[in-house]
Image (cartoon, rainbow, N blue to C red; front, side, top):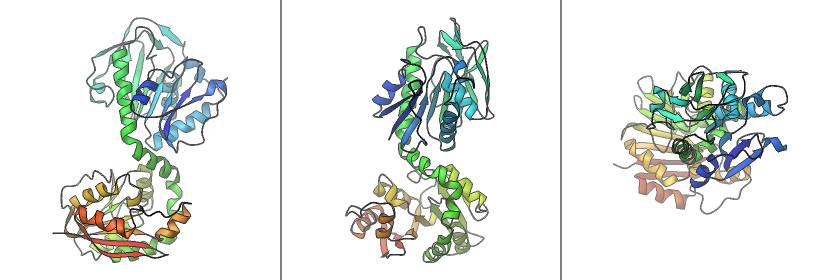
Length: 398
């Protein structure tokens, strides 16, 4: 894993952002498109994307053969919520990738006017707490028309949207952050906060970059598993009127069975960290049987004892800290509530499918799983590791 930095001009940096990323413990991979370096086919394996550049005119269609490939990567980053920073030319490309319009202009303009932060900057993750003015001696005469939903964070008299945010994880800076006269403290604070965000979101980014491009085909690919999910849900022993949670619900294969188990008076919640999977679940009609939530399974947005059952398929052994996850799941489970860990293939077959050996430290191995469940407040009452399925049923202790 590393941060991909796409560089357009020889010797341009990649600015102080590289120092900030390194200080946060992140590795940096520089792609020098000016030297003919090829762009990767996808962002899988990368924790963030940074696109830097020189004069904005370089983004025009003529003489810019990598434009379409970069726009593809930028759109992939936006869809998977990969942390993204566009600087100068990178900001222009970000705006276009998000659905905005780029307007050709006169290139770099040198003046002493200041970049003024907008009121929205005070609520932004990177800009909050900063002074209202950011000294910058260079800006770009090329303008952009921001896409719907984008937020302008900084502007100057003739050049609006000198800094902007698209969504919750993508920022563009149209002025040169390391030009003479630019406020170094402001720049370093923004870059440092971006690096901290990248490091904190790295596990989620890995999940989202894997599942987002696969979300549209997920239901078709695994449609045959539906009956086995229903059989597993039936073994939870849920009663009508109860509240049940599907963690890592994906395209929602278990949601209809969970709804049938708790009836019309019950509550079914489907939670996933990848927005594209929730979109796929809604497209399959699962928004009716369940409420769909985008959230982190390690920090559930639920009060203690809120649910009477948790169903989860193929999730626990992919988490960085399975023990901490079980503690969080136990927190939101009422006494005598049920936790069902399931997968439509056993551990041996699943490991072989992924081309890896089955090691003794596998968290789903009974000698490892049982003490983790005990420590979290669950009691393991059923453990099955057959060729055709894996199932572990646990009950929340009183």
